Image (cartoon, rainbow, N blue to C red; front, side, top):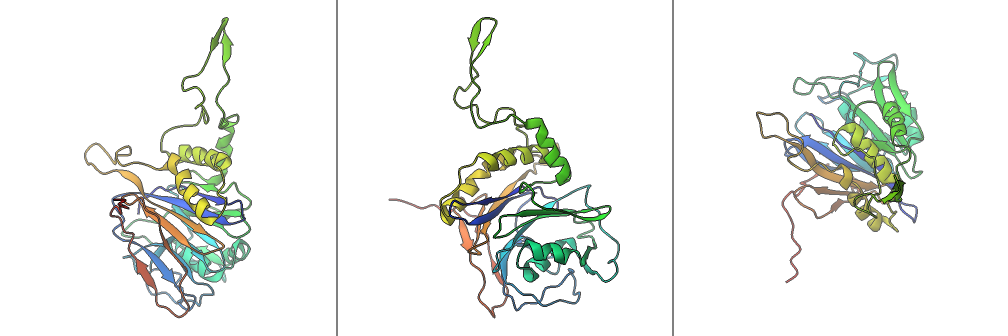
Length: 332
């Protein structure tokens, strides 16, 4: 499971709270489904038959299948807690066994455990004090991950497994990409102090007035343009700062899909190596709303936004295909 991804939290003018993410990966999303899980279903902390615990809240989100229990990579609950799992290579550190009185949880099951049992970020932070992330390889590889949570308060919490245990960052700027860690990424923004959404003013140089190229379109001058985690974090932070808020949920969701454009990786620009025509690319983008509990998504090959509502009580787990064939709205 080698994947990138970018995520940020947002809001609308009428007080709705959103969390979105891109899903960047080599290969395809054949093993991915949007799942809908009712509150009655038990939540297993591991991938292979570990004792399950009762849940309190139903949730909907994206999951990877084929590894035992579904690996939930993002989702939203009936209580309004939202979360996303992102790749954290070379930085994630897990314990070999659960600490005293703690529950051992696989990194791929943490989101499902938190979403099913916590009403918001406060309860999630409290629950994390009783959890030890214990890794078990998936197809011979570890799952290095860190997480972003948000809820109806708008606070974004970032969780990172490090050498000393779980680092929980409160009141963050609400942006997450991949490695290095959140502290480093936020500190790195100091390199871009002065970046605005305004064009640069003309400047007198050696007695001549010099104007920048692309006059009146110079906003964002100085931001990096590649698709590394560092560059995506910087661009997305400034996108969040300057993007125009939507007036309501539908407008906000539509704008948020567009706001991911600066970090959307097109097929062809991130090749695996010289020998194989395999590319990392943004395969899907998702946005969820804390107040409505609706999960919106759009795969790369289908620009139309699809949505799944929260499950009704007493239903079995539901699976929804991503629908990655282009759906054209013919007008004549």
